[in-house]
Structure formats: structure tokens, C-alpha cells
Length: 283
Image: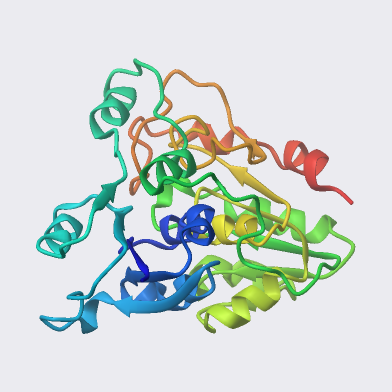
């Protein structure tokens, strides 16, 4: 019998499930359509169930166990009546909000550790998604779902100018327009496989607290995350990833980022200079 793993969104969260899916194999993975290709690439996943395509009886099977790594009201409803033991990730919502509102209290355990505790298996070493190889390319991920997580685009452009080898940028046209004008190869909305192939060519990937940087790390590609409104201790980067961040009293200011800096200066990311990043990533 398969274990059913539930994580409906988003990219980075689904990627981090690779820490436990191999130890749970064989796995059926339930997620949204947008992340189905990602889930199929995770170790131990034999089947992907798409939430938007579920019928009334799609989940009525003799599951070995159900691992709810989302723990949302929707995922909890999906677990009802399945007749299998359910293990659920602990979210630490109150503690995380206290860190934002009052800048008080200890941060929650890293996400991959919480996933492992819920699944009852140890955290698997990376890579979780095998890479085809490595190269001399610099990968840049300038975009993020929330504007407050974005390092200034002009600084990514300066990294591209300094890098002696090929450079590839990941993201949409608006996020990569300035980089495209420099002759940087742009991978935008070309599908999961094209993204994985491009990441596999990278010697180093630089970006913010966003799913594509999680994906690069899951593939074993050396990454550097530039953190602003979220912190390494409070976010998904507290598992030994390489990060640059400033120690400011206003951080963390949000659980997931927002449309703008709450106090207007965005110093958390504007204060990270190109030279500091370059010292970390230079060949």
C-alpha cells in the first residue's frame, strides 16, 4: 500500500517535501495542478493526484497512512473518512506570528524537521531531485511572489556583468527585462523540465526567499539566498543553507513577504551590497 502525502502548495513547500518522500516510499502525492510536475520528480513518488481533478471517490483507497504536510482546513477535510492513520505537520502559527508582531520568542523548528517529525522518517540528504550535471553558469532568480522579497534588479544585472561565464535568469518577462537586455538567457514559463535542465547547468544560483531557489537547493546546486522580510531562523532556510541577511530590529516583518516595506526604506535588502554578494559567489 502507498502512503498518501498531502501538500497542496506552493512551489517551495512542495520541493521541501522531498526531505521525507523517499523515506515514505511508495508515495501517492496530492497537490495542485501547478505543482504536479514538481511532485512527480520527488524521490519515492509513484503517483501524483491533482487536487483540481479529484472525484468523490478518488481518495477512497486502502492507504497505509496519510501524511498531511499542509495542515490547512482544506487538507484536514480531505483526510476525513479515509480510514487510515493520519500524521500531520505542526504549523507553529502563533509562535511565527509572535516573531513578526512582537519580535519575541524562539523561532519554530526548521520546516524539513517538522516534515520529518510528521512523517516519522529522518530528513534525507540532498539532492532530492537529481541534477544532470554542473557547469559554469550563474543562475539568477530576481523575482518573488511578494515585492518585499526582491533584491534590486539592477544589482542582479551588475552580478551578470561581472560573471565571466554564461548567465541564466529565471522568472517572468517583467522580472528579467533588464537582464535580457544584457544578453542573459531567460528561462520564463517554459515548463518544469526546462527549468531543471537550466538549473543543472549552474555553478551557483542567487535569489531571494522563493520557490525556484528551494528547487535549486533540492537539486544540490550551490545557492545563496538573500533574505529581507523573512529570516533564516523563521523561514525555510534554517536547515544549513547559505544566506545573506542583515541584523535589523524590524525583521522579521512578515510571514511570507508583502507588497512593500512596512516602514518604507526596504533596508533589509537594499542594505545588501553587490560587493558583499560577489565575495560569496565569485568563481
